[in-house]
Length: 374
View 1 (cartoon, rainbow, N blue to C red):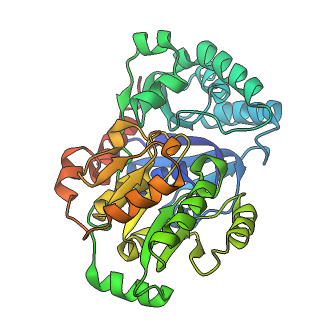
View 2 (spheres, rainbow, N blue to C red; view 1 turned 180 degrees about the vertical axis):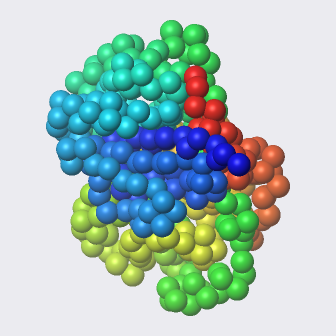
């Protein structure tokens, strides 16, 4: 009996590390039957990631282009050479800005039949060259987004950010929920007790936050909130989970605010669900977000969630998830977090009905990969 032909799939990212896009790809690939396809992850720069080893064990291969996102011409040359050599059936572009759409144009020229462009964000990070980057983003969006054969996005706002109006009119986007292993994130009282003991926060009011330590996630504001919280509840502890370029700056601010006994820098973890069990409330003051899968995971854990106004409506599923504008200030956030504390709820069915089951999302993407055509 003849085997079905092996589909050649490329998942492209600008950078591979331990962020949200990597977590998304890792989850869906782990829940696919990879026996009928060859999956390569290609990135301009490969960094250390908590997801790499597990995917390699599943047979996924990793390929770096130049090693730097700034070497655009070299990256494009190496990408083009790879497209011609490998003859992929499908390329799944996981992007957050318009200039990267130039790779979609190259894939079209190379004859790749199925070119999926997946938007994961809604804005660019603040920088001295942001105005120039926005100009290039808009140029790339208008010139290249119509070279895709499928448009996917984690929210409507993310779709409008990356895809031109003409592209969306010609090819309406599909909402792809960032799938969650719902049962894995279900609340466990025994895990809560164990982890709180390990962290020495048995009697504390634990405010949790998981995310890359960077300007977008706005942890510096969260430290101001923590200072206000300590006044209202002296047993407050902020549990920061993640790594990133802002860690030293945040540690310095902790010292300045006198919060050394109230902030835990945990670093990265392959088991965020265990830490969520130890939290009393989840704080998410991001300046912009595509969807923020960690906020959905927190809801799967039954945690009350207080988010900035910059989260898309698709992310709010449970009745304990609320938005509070950042302009309300640190004191108002402190009051809201303290008011939100309640027992973990059970919202797995609501999240399943909203389409956030990773099994359902992975099944849809697997079928799309196997179809191979536009």
